[in-house]
Structure formats: C-alpha cells, structure tokens
Image (cartoon, rainbow, N blue to C red; front, side, top):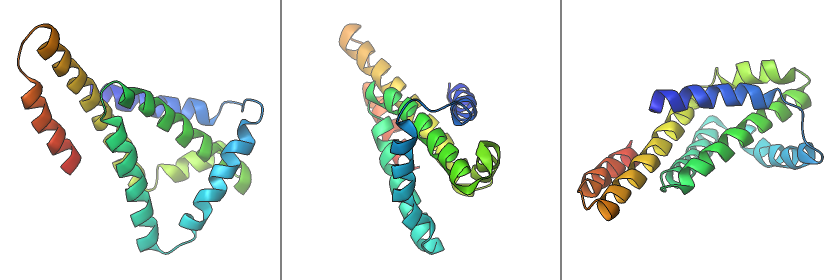
Length: 152
C-alpha cells in the first residue's frame, strides 16, 4: 500500500505541477511562496528546522483516520502548486523546479513519510472498524504501530 501511495503521490505532483492554474489560484499560491521565501533565505540549520517542523505537523495530521487521507491529497496538490510557482517566479519552468525539488534530501524523507502516515491512517480506521463492527481485536496492536510511526 505504501509503495502504491508513493507512486500515486509522485504522479500527481508531476501532473499538478504542469497543469494550468484555476482563476485566482496563482495569486494564492504566490502568497504562500512569499511566506516560505524567508525560510529559504535563512541558514541551513534554520531551513532544516523549519522544514522538519512543517513536515512533522503535516504527517501527524495525515495519521488521523479518514481525515489524513484527505490531507494527503491536499498536501500533494499544494506541494505541486508551490513548485510550479517557484518555476514561474525563477523563470525556469515547472520541469526545472521539479528536478530541483527531487535533488533535495528532505524531499526523499518528506514524501515517503507522508505515504507512511496516510497508510497508518487507513490501517487505524480499518482496525477501529473491525473492533467496533466485528468485535475483533487489532486496534491495540495498531496503536503500537501508530506510536512507532510517530517516532520514525
């Protein structure tokens, strides 16, 4: 499941980052780009800390059963749109911005972490369903996996 989510995530990032903007969407995403510009211009330690904090917060929300799957879609979409804005602002285009994104080590930690968190969201929802509807155990076991996922 995690590999499938990762493949879907990559495909959607490439598709959305090359799709045209809806009316007024560029302005909204450009404002988000302006919010991250100070982070990108800070030192390496500041960048790592800010990126980690954001990614950890998003992954924690993606673990929430049912809600996490929706946020997974939103985070993919927003990531792709910001990458597209970066390509437009820098005059390099989406392709170059995507190549730049995938050369960053944080990308190769962030994207799989989102997939793992989303898969855990699905597993938690299923374990809760089995426990409530079918009176079968498994939720306690899944909560242990949840704790391991948060630590990772």
